[in-house]
Length: 209
Image (cartoon, rainbow, N blue to C red):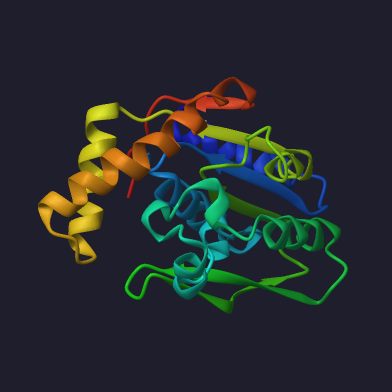
């Protein structure tokens, strides 16, 4: 069921009962999680909305204060408790609208209240690196998700995509390669270690559009 049509069918099947469901898309940095999540939401139309985990990045000033700016993207550089609280609100679906934050790479900061999730939307797709981690407080995420899909990208292509992304948002080629080596790849190792906890492993994804 890893063909594009199969993925859309499986995601659509999650909401066949009409109740709010949460689908997680997980994988290492640069695997294509946001591309897959947004493509699924586009295919499902008004039945789905994407809420990225990246909206819970700590602000740059706070990372500087904590001495973690050089590891931005590591598990302890997120407001994990805030993310868990949002997932609980989304799962309950008792409020007319729940607003989620969005991370803006252009300014390297999250902005609150960026993504409206109306109560009538039956499927929330949340994507991020750490949905399957077993360490507290990340361990609270997996029980809130109905399914988690793991995107298993080709390593060479994934690393190349990460380097291009960092260059696109202002890093020099040397800085981009260094950040991937010292930050992104240690994070990727933590993510791939829990790959087997996923409900579905997808061996690569190309946007059908």
